[in-house]
Image (cartoon, one colour):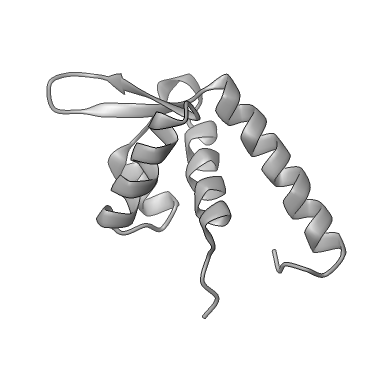
Length: 94
């Protein structure tokens, strides 16, 4: 079983948010699509909000969605470029 590193987890979370566009992805969607435990999700989403890669949009008093920011789009684009390059050299498995 291959474990993901921090960059891969961040890439997975940002990809899920990106897939859901301006509507954003809720916590449940991020947990399942990025394959995260709740504890892991909390740590990463907090960090991504603090760094401005994600924005939280409050839907009502009980729910919010997470939307990729422009900074998050740039990060995701650069991450995908790096992943592709590393893969082409056989350094990571896709």
